[in-house]
Length: 256
Image (cartoon, rainbow, N blue to C red):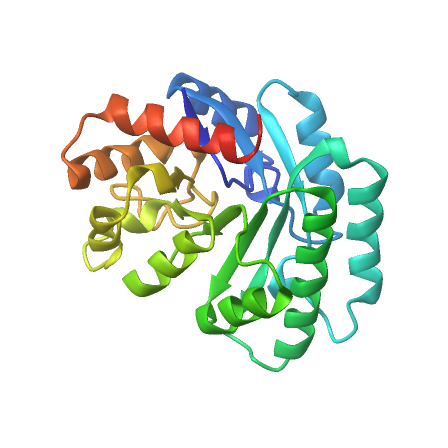
């Protein structure tokens, strides 16, 4: 069985053919699809999809850093209310984090939102799924300042350096590896080669970041096989090993 640990299959990009996308995922051997939350506009869509196939989907809850507004108090209250009113419904707090790629004007608000959500995850003993873009030093610094030096969770769509990778692993994180590992100019293969397979989980981030040979198209969960194939090639092992180890990693991490 394969697990897609990060898919936005509830998004409107799949409204016209979601059933077919799900069928292709299952045909490809995917047994679980984890749904990261984004913002108040997506929560109900996510909930509806997860409720339709409780055997296939698992939900997270959180506020995405690029959805943090000037005053995110109401949005964070919504996340808190959902998390604490039905904690068993959510396997993780995510996707949360810090994104300074496009806009740094709300850096302070993003950092405050991240720290608050990390605190809730610790209160509920849940993993965190982190979105980090152009902000690894800031995120590491915040996590170290927060208190705990050992976390459980995923650095989603990992895009840092090898030093960042080891720093994340030393703090307890797994690295989420997706379609970028198949790109010709990506540095991710070198990082995947250097770290243990036991610290990797598979993800698509669908509908974004489709792997080769689908790059430039809408991504979907079935394409996770391309990611697994590339990791097997990098690691010099067979696909079964990649499938088994990464699935075990995800099952243990999320207590599924």
